[in-house]
Each structure stands twice: as C-alpha cells, then as structure tokens.
Image (cartoon, rainbow, N blue to C red; front, top):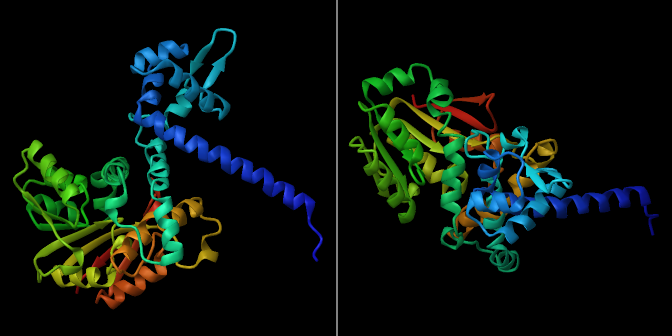
Length: 354
C-alpha cells in the first residue's frame, strides 16, 4: 500500500473547498445578473441592503443574503460601521450589462446545465443523450452571450479578417448563416449591409421565431429565416459567404453539414467558421484557461445534444486537429486559422472553395 502524501492530500482538500465556494458564487453571479442587482449597484453610492433592494425593486431579505455571498467572495465591499455595500467599478466592468466583457452573462450557464444533471447521469448508464428541448433558457442565454461577444465584434473585428469582404457585402452578395440560433449575427449583418441578401437556418422553431420577430422589429427586408436541419442543405452554389458561429460541434452529423456547406458555396466562395480554440488532445489542453469549463459544457450540453439524435457527439473540445481533418474531408483545400486579441476563446477558420 502506497504511503499517503499528506501535503498533497491537504492541498487537494483545500482545492475542493475552493470548488464548492466557486460553484456557489457562480449561481449567485447568475442571480445577480438576472435580477439586475449588479447593474443597480453599479449606479449607486455605498448603500444599505434596503436601499439596494428598493432601487432594484426586489425583496430586501433575499438581497441581503445574496449580498452575504458577494461580500464573502470579495465581489462587493462592505463597511460594518455604516452597513453600506459597494460594487467597485473595477468589478462592475466584468459584471454589468454596460460592459462588453460581462462574465456574469456566461455564469448563467451553470444553473441551466445543472437543470439537466439527472438526465445526463442517466446517459452515463444508458448511453444516448439529452435533447435541446430539455434545456430551459439555453437559447436565451446563448443569444445574450453571443450578442456581447461575436455580434459585438462582428463588423469591427470578425468580418475584416477576410480581405475585401466588407466591400463585397456593401456591394451585395448572398450570405447564409447555418445554425443561426436567435439570428442576432445575421440580423446585424442584414441591417449593416442592405445591398446583400441574408438567410438563416436553424432546426429550432423557437429560435427561428425569435429571429424573425427581431427582423420584423428592425424592418429588415433582405433577410429570411427557415427551420431546417443543417445536415440536409440542398442548395448548390447559391452563396458567396456561409458562416457558422460556434455551431458545427453541436451538430448530429457535422460531416454532412460541412459537405453541404461546401456544396452550397459558389466557386471562390468563403466559409467563415468560428469554433472553440483548443486541441483535440486532452493533454494539450492542460494549460487552457477554460479547460474544465469547456469539457463540462460539452458533457452537459454540446456532446449530449448531438448524441440525443444519434449523432457523432464531437463535443465542444473537438479541437483544431479534428476540425482541419473534417474540413479537408468535406472538400475544402484552403484553410487559414486566425485569432483575435479580443477573443481568447475562439478560432476563426477562413475557408475558401476553389
């Protein structure tokens, strides 16, 4: 029997305490975002729990207990002499809706994923997967998260990755967004480039309804949405630009989706694929700043929703190596991977059809 390394064991116990605290903080961060408490406190001077609750139109007793978590986690400052709480501006920069880097948005995924824990555990025993329909609020949270990341940087950073693309969009081209979700990216492009024609496909009736409503609210006449299985793209040489934003690894048959995208592009057309920046090999992700997060969201969402349809179950961390392999198998010969300074999470694959 091996001798127990007490120092190593105690260090791990300390880490487990950190895990428990961090999990609790994540849930309370989600609540702080959803209730608007962070936004309210960012606009207030040092205030009592009652003043904060009144300003946020919330119940004081619940606000006070929430503040307990935030104070003990060092998110919020507390003065015991006055009973005042204060959200430092340095923290508000990462927790409020006025910030383009609001991590509190992403914290919402924690309780959303926890809601399917029992069903995922069943899959550990029985196989199969958990369908999209089982996830409360997932599309809403995903749309909000992508709205402040991909959509916010689309015109200034993402589209300029492709030489002459902005000029082509201004002149007028045909664009398809596969797996468009709630349509924020494609609606944003349609509004910015009125001479181009845009189409969005997603298999979810719920998200397509949201996308259509937003297009109607914006009075957009150059965009259309359709409920469609991305594995059944039937168009041949119909588009000059096809985009997927964090969508391929979720697909049941990503191989068929990529083949369909290749077929739907016109000669010299461009495929823009945004996907998670990671390796296909777990040992190469040991230093990844979001490694545990990515494998967890994969197990509890991306992988399992694919498997629920009898799919390949690529998972969130399918990685560059597998992505390049599958793009080549789909017929793409020219692939360039670009990174953005403002986005350490994603890679941007610029793929041209010859």
